[in-house]
Length: 273
Ligand code: NAD
Image (cartoon, rainbow, N blue to C red; front, side, top):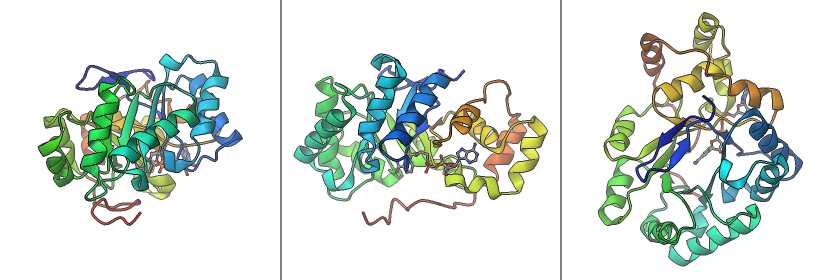
């Protein structure tokens, strides 16, 4: 169901379905998106300091009437803040904007070379100090993870990656599973491009569901956390309506088979911000 969870390696329950708020504008747009999502039963919100909407996300949670502990709240340290002291400061700034006293999950947004190990030490401190319930990374390929794991005292609980039927990276998923790192999808709807692709329409018709619902259901059946973004009320509600059907194993494989290594976002080996 919408409030179902995957269990992270430290025992924390992470709701496997959440709302992404990248490009939801701070102020009324993001406040409404968060409120509508929580009213619809979502229990997981994914923001980041670079989205510049943490203040509105916090307001949306408070205005929804949901209790803090009912919401799995995720934010990310931005690249220019990486390093030990600057990460600790960035975390405080995020909590101030969100007006909360802990996060459920804090992520290293990108693997900034030469910095992410110091950033991770700060994450371990935040975790040990009880200021965040789980810590993880984002956009870490296998070689980044292998490098980090050499010095890490705490194995990341999550790796949030671009993931959709055109970019499956099954080897990376297998590596994460082997290392007890929960895989999570960003841009699960290809940033909206999925609706232009003819090949998904047939499956949607077969199950009597929308393209978004088919693909988001595939995420969960593959054991991948998913956080589709919308700031429209009807879409926020419809995207979560994926618990009354199941894709056959064949159709899961059919979607797996569409993989063509295509990114809509930046390549973690070649980003410049
Ligand atoms: P997405 O794949 O969730 O697609 C969002 C787009 O699809 C929006 O334009 C939206 O209007 C449209 N859409 C959503 N539901 C629809 C529907 N039912 N019908 C028609 N159109 C619909 O893209 P995203 O926002 O890039 O990714 C989701 C979330 O992942 C982000 O909001 C953010 O929280 C996170 N993210 C993280 C990273 C990272 O580096 N860690 C990068 C990108 C995104």
